[in-house]
Length: 351
Image: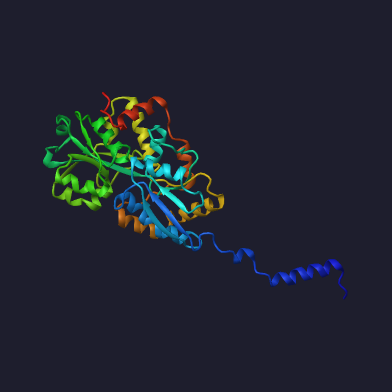
């Protein structure tokens, strides 16, 4: 049977196609043989670092090409130093990821001095946690055995990392709402250093994560080293099984303004510790990393490792959810100014 030109061309095209490699199958994954650096706005060894360490092996597993992933630590100014660096200096090639902490969003919304980044222009990869329980603890040897003793004392020393750090801000809000008299805020510690400094009496009280307290310092509770005075639930109503009977911080609020500023802080905390990419990162790399992060957060192995390292269950916020949460954050100017007075470096405002 004689073939016409069209049939012959079609046959030759199909025949040759059988012997041509599929470019999609032969293409080397972008991340194969490359190294991704995760810049953390914190010091090594603390809870924030443990959260990242739990995720990295699984992030590597779920990125096609399984690149090497390393951490770089850049503490300073409550995460502002690292965030500014990622926003302004990092090459947007998909090879550098930031993990800054909740202060990333709070510092920007509050317009803190030194913030050079725009949270609306960053690309978000999600967070390993969006539910949180802060507890305010006091050193028993300081005589701060209950709320009455806290309110009666003057000049209670509250320890934290740095002005602008989430632990500092939450500690200030607890002190304000509980009604401490002229509290003094002692800063300059890393997370692990805070654990060492409290029993030594370098300060009298601090805030910490409830599950971290149970994992790293449970003997403080069993031996009566500290008293746990109150708790903050994020989101409100999520009871902690061990501390379910503690007074929730909102019970100390006296006005709608105080409840609104507390709602703002809960919103900041619910964003968690965002993984971010600098503006201008190519969409191809963004899609790869966002998909890999979603798979990481859903990986049972990650949940096991996270629980082992932090003592807490992960409560992931996925990339799209985080992007929406940032856009919907309350930004009422009056409440922002009130919040800034509470979270800043000066005396707490009068009630």
